[in-house]
Image (spheres, rainbow, N blue to C red):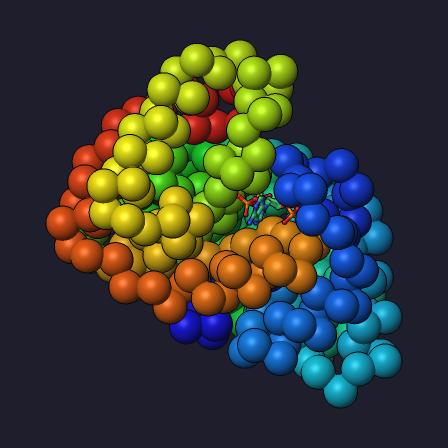
Length: 291
Ligand SMILES: NC(=O)c1ccc[n+]([C@@H]2O[C@H](COP(=O)([O-])OP(=O)(O)OC[C@H]3O[C@@H](n4cnc5c(N)ncnc54)[C@H](OP(=O)(O)O)[C@@H]3O)[C@@H](O)[C@H]2O)c1
């Protein structure tokens, strides 16, 4: 199961990223070592995460462990003749910084339609893949329009989107019944950690009342079925038939081990259906940009 877990690295480059637990925040070296020991072989990073790519490169220099690295390209502009140069420079720099031979999935870090549908950008992405610098091309999306476009487009091999017990609206609307053979990668499976760090919801989320009401329904389900909510949060996403992998972000060793352990948990189809029904409803607070 760990081969479907991808370790996110935003936290290692951006100290105050997301909602953290009270656990000891370990170094990237300790977390990478532990992840590797338990079968995690893939990292998700971005030049936008400060020095995260350099940390991966330092790790690769000092360790015999080698991770597959997926990263992103950022700061592109629509209809720009500079796009090809920017994409090549960005990828070559990412390869150098992270110490890998090629990038596993290169995502566009910008999700806007004007970027993901731009012909000049798309042609450059095709070229860099043909040249062997990246294996797959991906998008990291936030809404249904972007998701629909990415599903229909020939260029994208991988679609990364938020999916969780809190919110699987986009997944249920567009991916669940699609016949796509693209790789579907779920991110923010704890909605940036909000699910397990609830004391911060009132001060950080505009729609806190709705969010807390919803979470209490999940608590109730977990109680009825005698399963920890944490287990449900991990196994629900991994049990969705179209989800190929999950990105998890933690800097706490115990939390990483719990995620790996929980990913083995088999959720019953009855409970799966109940969570699916709840999480498939549209929620404005499902997108952290609206908090
Ligand atoms: N547009 C994009 O491309 C995009 C956007 C967002 C994220 N991402 C990627 O996805 C990764 C994860 O993103 P995310 O932060 O949104 O993901 P998330 O997995 O929903 O939440 C991560 C947060 O959950 C906390 N957490 C984990 N286990 C916990 C536990 N047992 N109890 C309490 N808190 C716990 C972590 O804190 P601790 O460190 O304390 O465990 C961390 O702050 C990022 O690193 C990045 O690689 C990509």
